[in-house]
Image 1 (cartoon, rainbow, N blue to C red):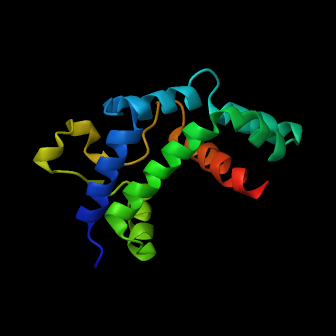
Image 2 (cartoon, rainbow, N blue to C red):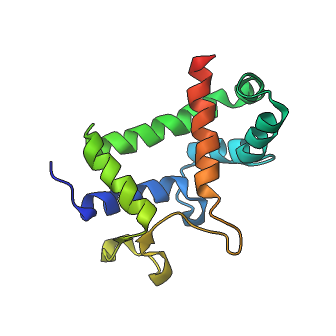
Length: 150
């Protein structure tokens, strides 16, 4: 399969529909998992605290053990979407992430019904704050990966 921006746009559209809470298309199980993981205390704050205290990764993983089912559920859902769109082709996956990072994936698909300001697939910002999604995603992935390493 050759890379095209359509492949990346369709991937990011589906990914956003499930994991971007602004689109409110999380099914009830995914929404419960999302709210439990990012609700009371965002993973970013937990990750930062353990990094600052020098208790990362062990205490970070220990603290998140009560969320392991929810973290696994959402991580498995992310892997499913990656596989559905890229079929294990890491070069295409890499290009889709690079184009996302550059903010060049303009989604003009009328079926996607995105508002004009949401047609470029990119990490959303909470202007004037920096994009939080990269930080949140990093803390989430580290929680899942570290669970296996300890």
